[in-house]
Length: 72
Length: 157
Image (cartoon, rainbow over all chains, first blue to last red; front, side, top):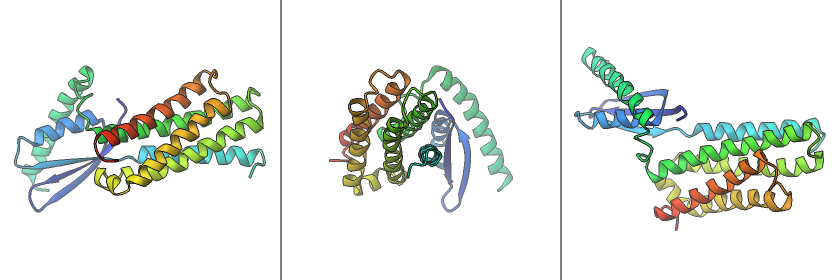
């Protein structure tokens, strides 16, 4: 499984701590399950910027190729 | 951060690394993703496949397997798909409720990605082009799966 970026929101009522790290999703889900045994809660948000990055790379590749061949 | 809290987080993170490693080996969480999370993962795979197609087409043109004209036609499709997918990703990032609120736009984007890519298989004859047709078929399959899952989950009607 490829590493993904997640944002973990840890809540103990009023205080929130945000952490961001590359982590496999299975690890994040294990972590969430562990928090369910405590008085704290953990919300996992999967960041989908990998898709945006791939799309922007595609656009840049195509635009550079077109420019190289004089295609508008 | 309070010392006790820091210690607690350190213990939990260590345990999760230990258990996570075991979980990865046995792939025990493969089915733990929600349908929406699967859609998000498929979307990343779709964007990756689309980038792969662009790279393969450029490589084929540079090796004179494809003419500049034919490569340009295929790459124009890849650029359009990347544009559609970027818009789609921004909606998916906002979660299922936001997708529900924009369901017509999400459905249109997925239909456009699917039909534009499927045209490559017929109009530009990439059916028998090995890796290229695999990547193109992957985009069609992923967009189909994404749409059908969102419909099944009631996110899109």
